[in-house]
Length: 276
Image (cartoon, rainbow, N blue to C red):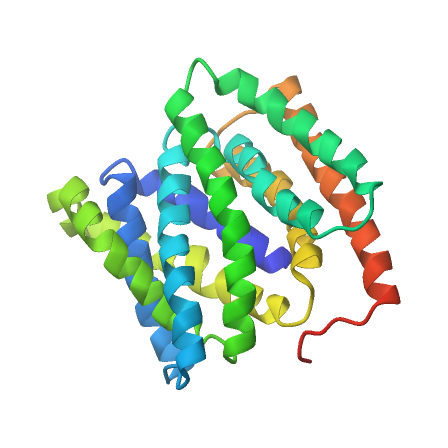
């Protein structure tokens, strides 16, 4: 999960560099296209059951919308702040599937952190804020639907058609918005790297994890993402953070860590139904 988090956030930094020559929608399309090719080579086969294909279709559509909203957001907002706000989605999954009232404390802490960042962008970047909030909701759906794909297939077999569906859904808007920008050699190279760092590698890791832990536990395991994103944004994109930003990110990470501790205790008492 640590490796997956670092890969995803490095992919975000690569995407920001690609935005200088192509639109976010165009970059999202090329990313999905290259990821599909990489996953098809890695999987060496396609799903053989109707259940797997039925799970891949909605997952691929949600993946397309989630990535498009996220890239539109980080073209307007700092990477660390964007990922922190987006994290409301995974925390929501953890809370909705929780049976402990004590977890509401962690929700309050997470809401405080997200609100601190949201206030800073409400007037300056309303579009970016809207996109990242939408991406958070789609991230929650990704977790739920991704678990179905993980249970219906083995390895990355189910992920390849989902990425293909994502690329197909993004083809028209991506090509229409970017036009000749997608023919730029630098953009093609960055998107190929992005397909590996931002999709194929981390998503394959997540499929592995989703088959072994409950959705709620998986959600809180993502608690490192805001901190990693802030670090990558500072190092790779020179996106400095103010005191308020640091406090907000710390609140969200602390909320996730607290929920993780509760989830670990719950998992220790009740065996998971996920296949081993």
